[in-house]
Length: 259
Ligand code: PGA
Image (cartoon, rainbow, N blue to C red; front, top):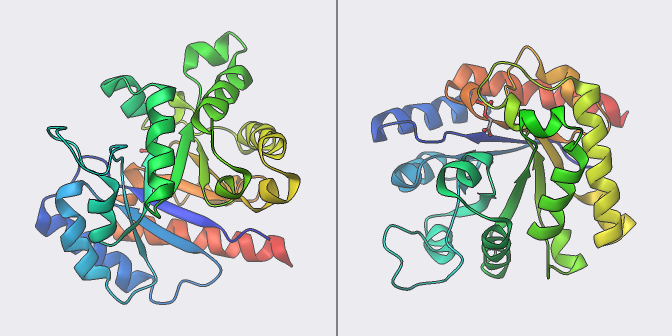
């Protein structure tokens, strides 16, 4: 059985004081999260401070992206070993905001993903279709293309070490989440592709998270879907109360589905 995973993506939010307070509140609210794994991804500037606040707690630290090289002349970029040094164990890759705003291609995302694996970071590969792609009936084609390109050259054993996030672009930050069954269908499709790309066993072990307007009020229905193994949460991860409520619900639904 897959342990539910809930990741908070803080995006470009938070002064140091705010980041410390948020991390402290989450730590306090989730003293012993059982049956769920929890990760927070603060902005780069707050990673060290949040690492300090979370030290000794089960809540893990992740980054929102990384460069694919270990060092070099890349102004403004952050290398995987720098993140590892700060205590990061996870890294989000291919988030739709980076694809759209920074122009990250599938090929670049693939380089980053392979570099993250080499340096011991767990990548969370994000895929998802735009409104237009869904309207044109291209949802499956889009996510399949992103998955295949993102995982090019990755071994079956390495596939077993990462997580996926299905984040329909039209659901991110809009308040309109995908219907659980609608997301579940895409998750099932992605898992089928993982079976083909790696193996059935590996595909069964990989967590596929849903992201896009997840909040405490809708997380139950989403994680009750057998193919949805947790959530990647943006806006609702910015308050300790909101995020901890989501984590607790995901843990409860996960435990119930294992019974
Ligand atoms: P949202 O963002 O929860 O604010 O919709 C999710 C994400 O972009 O990861």
